Image (cartoon, rainbow over all chains, first blue to last red; front, side):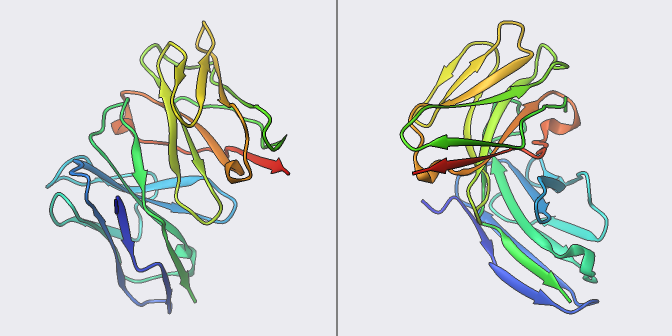
Length: 114
Length: 111
């Protein structure tokens, strides 16, 4: 089972370049999330999508945009990358936003901005 | 989300039980207690969750104190593959029920 698939796995960008991180899930989940994890830290929520057609800001949304393309796919875009956005990015999905549902995470995208 | 407190790190011997504690003294009556773990260089992985009663699944057991102000994740026989950071998280009805990750407990398993 694929679960949550993120592409690419690694990326190096120059300051000011743009890129889109892709995420797709095959579990027919309604809710999807983007997190970032800096070295030695816990995960912080960037954006989430409760259901197809909706997106909302999380804890650290500045410098990012998202698109819920359809029920399966949720992309994260960096319009003008900065060194402070060097991090590991995780996409996740869950059946819904209910308190008693589990989330499934992708393997991450390791992004370096130089 | 309400806050949780976990030890920064713990050590265990292989094939012995491990009890990972979590304090959540400000938990509300409707908060669910979730546990996730993150193996090196991987995304977090769901372990278990519960509300009031103790819970068991194939990965672990969750023991919840009667006053719900603390809980313990129990790995019955630690293996080297269980070496990971374990996160205890409360999910409530606010802020869209997001998973908020703190520092977690780094579990080291010795052969």
